[in-house]
Amino acid sequence: MDYRDLPIRDDLRELTPYGAPQIDVPYPLNTNENPYGPPPELVADLARAVTEAATTLNRYPDRDAGDLRKDLADYLGHGLSVRNLWAANGSNEVLQQILQVFGGPGRSAIGFEPSYSMHRLIALATATEWISGLREGDYTLDAAKAVTAIERHQPNIIFLTSPNNPTGTAMDLDVIRAVVKAADEVGAMVVVDEAYFEFARPGTPSALTLLPENPRLIVTRTMSKAFAMAGARVGYLAADPAVIDALLLVRLPYHLSALTQAAARTALKHVTALLGTVDAVKAQRDRVVGELTALGLHVVPSDANFVFFGVPGGDQKALWQRILDHGVLIRDVGIPGMLRVTAGTESETTAFLDALKESLAVLDGES
Image (cartoon, rainbow, N blue to C red; front, side):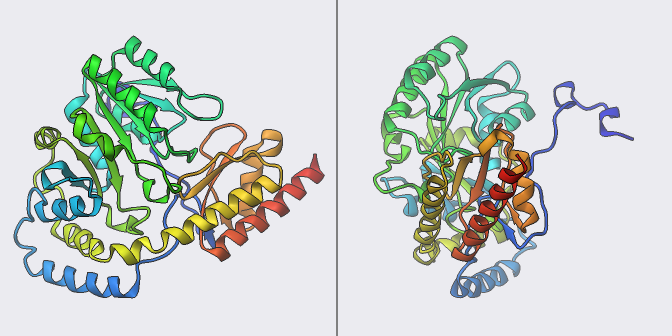
């Protein structure tokens, strides 16, 4: 039986599950993971922390993850406290909880695409109408046009991404200010997704600086990228305490396991070592930007741990397959003429660049 033969919701019937291809290759550079594993001292501490947590697994964990939220507040700084922080199983669960409490039937959310596709998919899954706003040709967001879209559609939730995924560029703080002001006038919440913020170029301001004066603003982060903890599934947000109180209405009981909380708190004790890999990743990102630019390819400026680039001739599927034939998996996000590659280790980046150059030469010879 096909799942479409089951009595599923009509608005889900034609959707396809989210997910990048999972292909066993020597160089997986398609899901924006940190290529550096946790340092040995963290692994040892994790083993001890998980072992200790395992002794009380017959009991439910701290329902509100108070200690973890305090640790996250200490990490973020900006005068934030435990009352400003919330955590869940990956930033996607954080986004889902936001949409459950502020979205739903009869309500709408707007995002400016291309952007993180899960904003739209989670909106649809929570029966929230999705409104697709547009970016400029260079993938930036024009503040005046964004404000016009907000005034016209009167959404309940507005999604911004900084740095943007899949294009990589951080958003100017003045654009966020303009959107927050417009949102306040229509009574909407603003979510700024900063999943890749730790990789931003020097001098890039965070939307966290805007929180004190804007109670309708939410800034989401993750431990999956810069923290190299994708397998732990920990995401979090910072917002006004009233937002946290609202999220308590929809969070499932004991949603963060004791093991997850123990792993996340242990990682935060090793923040210096974990974030020590960020500069290495940024160096390889900048190397990719430089070499692709030298090849004459269109490259979007990146503040993330990936690079979004144009394909000569516009056939991204052919180039993606050629690169894959060399054992390097990158991402085709479905935007014609564009591909995205994650910054890897030095050797992984070299493998990608070599595969790209050879693939371009072959495709050029076939044209």
